[in-house]
Image (tube, rainbow, N blue to C red):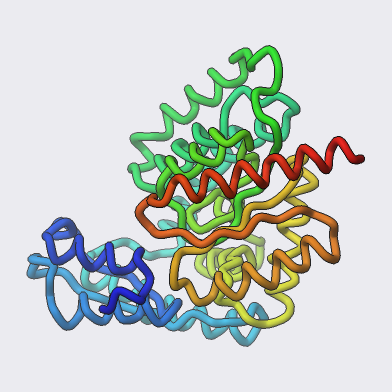
Length: 324
């Protein structure tokens, strides 16, 4: 893969070649973007993961959210996820097992959502950086092991005293492509802007909504319906999903009392590069919400340039407040 492709997928391939994923049993991938497809293809062709039982399976996810695409989505997951999980990994994929998994998922979602709700307060008892760490922990740690600690954290926050005065100069929604480094959130906050909502890949908005199983549907149908509706990846190109992304961001700005939005995209990310330009124009010109757009590497670098951009954006938000 050339140096002009997404640094995130290149880092995944590099780690696989170095042996960092030899403990894995499978890669469940999707044809999300060209760079991700090439990475998954290389894992299939090069066999860098030294595990005899390792296999690669890839779904073709839909690009729209209507009923026809939902049916296609279910067929893809049935063929490329459920069957391999059952036949190759021996996982119980019965309706009862899925309902139990949904219950466990909803329990951890309720805790993460309750923790995230504190960010709506005028003076929250936690920072955006702290929540970013909590959200990442909930995604990478076994749920049965981490859930008790998350519950303890929630109880602690209910009694934690916030700073005497709000310690930030502005409140912002952070939106865009993949962010799995809490240091990026810390960088934003050291520039004076608290990240009150995380609307990016691996963030909690959306991803921590409960899966509701209707009386007339199976757990599998509910899971597919849920993820096709809440998935707001910029890969979705139809007007309904584009409007949903913008309306959801407007809701977050309102609910979390944000002063502006920082749109970021990974370098060479084709989908979020387009979305960033379109959405920031709509938010600024049609809704009067200040936006700052940046492009970044996967590994946090050029911190001086980013810090200058963020500081200037925070100052502009302060000036707007004074003007109003």
